Amino acid sequence: MNRVAAVLLALMMTSMTLAGCTGDDTTIQELEAAALQDQQKIEQLNSSIANSSFQIVDLQSQISALNSLIVNLNMQILSLDDNLTSESEASESLQLQVDSLQTTKEALLSEKAALEAQLAYEFQMGYAQGVADASSDGSAISTLDLIHQRGTLKCGVKVSQWGMGYLAADTGVRSGLDIEYCRALAAAIGLNPETDVEYILATGANRFDLLAGGDIDVLIRTTTWTGSRDTELDADFAAVNFYDGQGMLIRGDMVPDDGDYSPADLDGLSVCVGVGTTSEGNLAGWADTNGVSISTVSVQDSWEAVVSLLDGHCAAMTGDTSALVARKYLLESDGSCGPDADSTDDDCDGLWIAPETMSKEPLAAATRDYDSEWNEVVSWTWYGMVTAEELGVHSGNFLSFADACVWGGADYNYQICTLLEESLGLGTPSNPLSDNWMKDVLAAVGNYGEAYDRSFCDGTYDGVSGSDAMTGCFFPRSGTLNALVSEGGIQYAPSWR
Image (cartoon, rainbow, N blue to C red; front, side, top):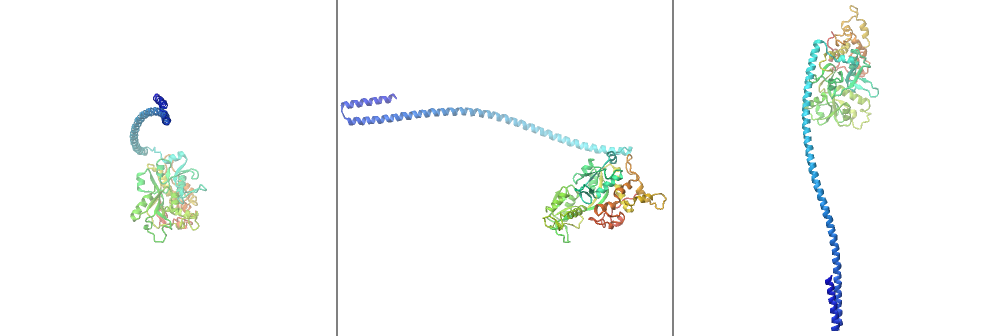
């Protein structure tokens, strides 16, 4: 600024000197104009310098703020680095703990499996020894004794198969040959078949578990007697109450019933089959034997199979022929299939059963192993019903036959009187069967023919006239394995003596 003032002063003095000396006004004016312009430029420079100074101060302020922010961020970065290091170390520590716990868990699972195996072995050994000891000292506790202590018979049954084990949803009434067997068994051991039987649902998957675990006393539920089940499971089979065979219920729109059926008709189609049934293995073997490629659709029960059949997911369903016949009968009776059906899936009225038996299916009752006294009662109850029909004894005449059981009397019949008035030593020392136990059975369910007729026919059979006399049957007994031996079937009982 001092330099600028000095320059201005010099210019003014020069101007005065020139004015006084030369008197050249023009030159003086030009110099004054030039000086004025220089002054204006100097003022502009001063203004620019001032603005720049302000900008420099502002920038310096911003730089200071940024420096403070950088310092703060650096401190945060250092803190985060410390946290990350700490968290990483914590994560590694936790992972080490998890690995250690997993190792401990695996060791405990292995120890648990070993203990369970040892327990099962010791239980079997102890059970077998207990049975052996009990056999020698008469201290065996039979299921029959437990039933009498409880006051009820726990019978494992089906609820969905018409003719064998069926529970009517609208009335709560149970029916079927298996139900008749349960009621007969209750009567045989002195219980009331109307009030003292507890029916427990047994599925294809859980039935043997229920039996082995003591949840049921006897399994009477369309159960096939096989070698592997007899030897490998905790089950002892009793009498065969129905001789069945595996069959195939087929949709007519997918496989027409043209009278010329062969397994190849099902090639490439889907077949529904129950889980945990002998039908599963039989179906696989049948397909392999016949060179048929099928898609197996596993279902939990017959209801699921029916739904899959009706909606077209399965071209056929397989199982015991008795079950298939019953299912077809019900579907046609309730309007699900047939000419008046509401189904939108083409030929629901075309359901038909293939004329082929894929396997033998002897359906028998089953008890737990190592309980022969109870198994004998279960078996001979059925044999008693069969023997009664063989001898012409039924629910309507057994009392008259019993009245004639006077030794030496004119109407005395040794076989009939033995049936009606002998216990055969059945039962346990604590709970022997009474000499009148078969009378109680006949009063409760009648003979085999009467029980069959109520299950599969119209219930009007007189109990003595034979299978051909049964009417209104959706599964006739005549001409089948379930007819009496005298009629060409194979249903008969061991000698009653």
